[in-house]
Image: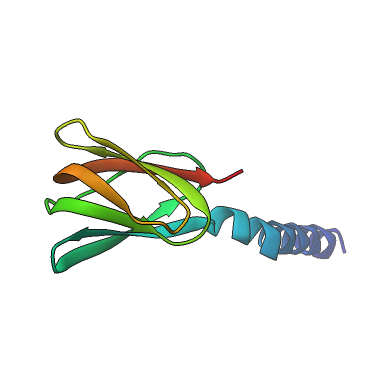
Length: 106
């Protein structure tokens, strides 16, 4: 009986850990599109403020993100581009982006 009780306790703990609220918190993020003329790529960024590396050499001229988040991107030549909400933001001068981070807008 003790073995069953321990197994049941572990099962309930696992179910509680995988509840929708905790899954949503771990999966919260935004997809951003990096564009240059007729070429673009997308990348997902968590909205926890962590800095994510961008591994694409495209010289970007515009960035657009979905959702109502605020994202900050750093270019290879020192540009800092802040995108708020879904409004696209020009990168000036166009350059490869090397990192980015996003947080929920207040």
